[in-house]
Amino acid sequence: MKIIVGLGNPGTKYETTRHNVGWLALDRLIDAWKATGPQNKNQAEIYQAKVNNEPILLVKPQTFMNLSGRAVAPLAQFYKCAPSDIFVLHDEVDLKPMALRLKTGGGSGGHNGLKSLDESLGQNDYHRVRIGVGHPRQLEPDDGRRNMDTADWVLGQFSDQDLRELDPLLDRIKNAVELAIRENMTKAMNRFNTEDKVSDQKKDK
Figure 1 (tube, rainbow, N blue to C red):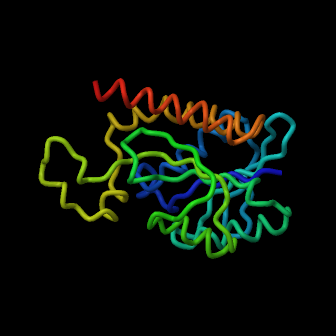
Figure 2 (figure 1 turned 180 degrees about the vertical axis):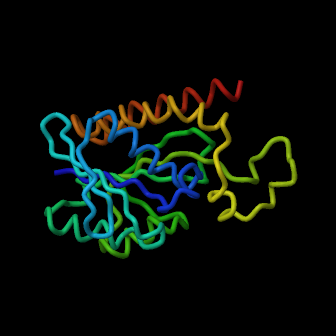
């Protein structure tokens, strides 16, 4: 059993905010894998699917971001899932917009959803699928938003152009998670983190 968690906030006003990109990525997996559900349980929407004959739970906590762990920890305990069985899809301000990085373990980086998971699970060595949303200080040209509060930035809406650019990234995320499940996280990191670096280098030229 694998548990894949998309971090986000419930409510229509948050649907296309940067902070909810984990939910958008989870929705792509739900559609691609023809997952069944949702079942409302443990303060979460839960969908079920199979990848390579591996049972998968796709989880959207309904607790709001800073309490996400309360929805995930009981599921991990009930299904006896180790941290290596848990994948968390989340926004990352320390990555350029539309960048993708996979990693296992590490700190929360100030992300309230990850903080809650660390506290509730009692450990932080689960897998992370980090989806870049950038930081206002990176904005070029400076249109007056560089000093914007980070919380306001991540709770801001994606533009129509952002959503168009996000679409192929969501497919890459699906492919990365599938590879991690079929093979292992190391292979997925070697392939998709390297691809992302090449993509970044092309953009910088």
